[in-house]
Length: 405
Image (cartoon, rainbow, N blue to C red; front, top):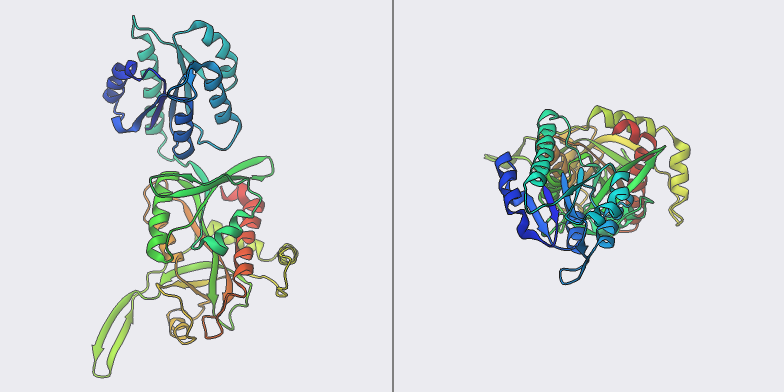
């Protein structure tokens, strides 16, 4: 459980912290800031179960305390999507006049205001009771714990992540979730309901970088669904340029053992295949029959791309190198007769989701075909393939999000 205390009188919380530690709260999960701007920065990157907010908070550490700074922060938490919303908020003050001014704003969010006193510990007991209730709720509801509805991983900033950010999902500026990982947050509507989304990309291509980033996003942001969109190579005869593949199953085509025999060296294949959840696959299969929506999507791209996007549900293999020789992909086809695509990241994300602790997200990948991994490989269709994959993801979420979540 994480607790944020925003108060310019930090020393008065020593006794409270001892009581919280006795309840089982770890000291490094209790963060104290002394001004509204520092609190805002914490809430930009971290989800807290409890916020204790001083009603007379300065805007900057060296500034004068005042109720407008605290109420402005409260309003930003409640009315915008720029900050992670704490599960509960408690106001605290020794100033009865400030408590009266803030009462309506706190009541609007069903939050409480506690009166601080140097002469008794009643305020400590009230906060402790609240924390014990939160801890009991967490203990009694083990099936809950998701924070984010959808997390989207892209392998490349350009063109993949750029096309994702073009979706009208109210994207925020980049914000950190730890010392070196930044994400963009957003929201999209499905009927009357609003769903949260985060998007990010690793600093390097490949399965390892993708698996590490995916594991971090799953652990810190706890998404219900984790998806990948972007570009891949297709298998000629199975797919066309501009098609979008749902990778089911995915595996590492380089997994196995190199053996030596009389004829030289041979490779014994040992693929570990990971599948898309049936819930996701069945809804993608429904979407692929909507030729009108897919056709309109292609027309809206606004360039000289003259093809038509199809959605193909098929096996996609992952490897650690870009393929452009035209022969390697032929050898990979022996691992699955329905192989339709090859790329470098999907299996890493699927593996991270499959090995995640509770609550596990459902993982799937939608990638647009931009070439056939041969000597004719070029960047001509990368932009459209990235656009198509992102917009198929949008169609899937905005049409079926209320069922998938």
